[in-house]
Length: 276
Ligand SMILES: C[S@@+](CC[C@H](N)C(=O)[O-])C[C@H]1O[C@@H](n2cnc3c(N)ncnc32)[C@H](O)[C@@H]1O
Image (cartoon, rainbow, N blue to C red; front, top):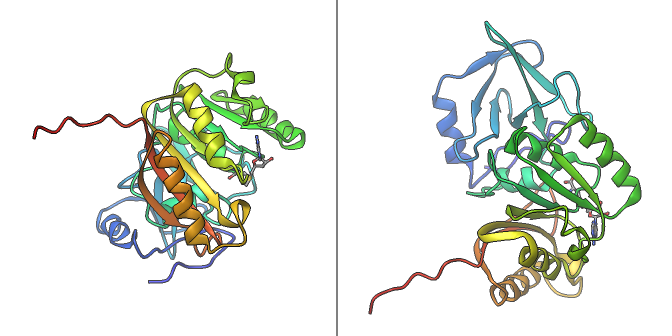
């Protein structure tokens, strides 16, 4: 089944994830009325803190931490319960590579409620805002971004979302922010730099716990536009394997992003002692 192409909503129907999505369909959910009539919202079967809205099209959602406000013009969906109102924000797969990775069939992003995250390349906070909602209000996300302009947006976002720590710095120099960032559970990187994998692993040496999750969005043409994308991805994986990284899974992000792969793995995985 081909993914749908509604860019405004970023709705998805995906090949690898489709059987999982069908499972959601079978269960009864919460019907919501005031924005998207007939939509059924259920927790995502694989990703704690992420929700799936099933209506005419499937959409990914996170629960809005700041009710009544959007971050990048995304739609919001309110659900009125007897004692409270909950609001969800659409997580657009065309605007967020992490959402695209989920829609394209990743099994684990390691980002879940209560996992501290170091986010490299936070830009204006589009994906970051969803990550901050997945980990929850009591868990911090350390967001590194070197553009001053995006940095201003990040600071404004962090004023509304207390679990975001904006760090306006170059991710190539982790020693400069070592006093701000503790040991984290996950590093997510989306910095579109030719030496991104090296930058990620340098940050991992400073901040990532052993067996921590590493999630990297790789744009092939940023690394080397003279060879096929597949070759770029496999070279990056081979380099990472020699540098304390165990690859777990990889998906390409078509049709949401061309020439991109999302790579997921573990840092310094424990060696299992097999008895001969
Ligand atoms: C593709 S955009 C990130 C989009 C963002 N992750 C999202 O989904 O909302 C890449 C960002 O990485 C930032 N960046 C690139 N190199 C960087 C570096 N060495 N240190 C910090 N930020 C960097 C750029 O300024 C840009 O904002």
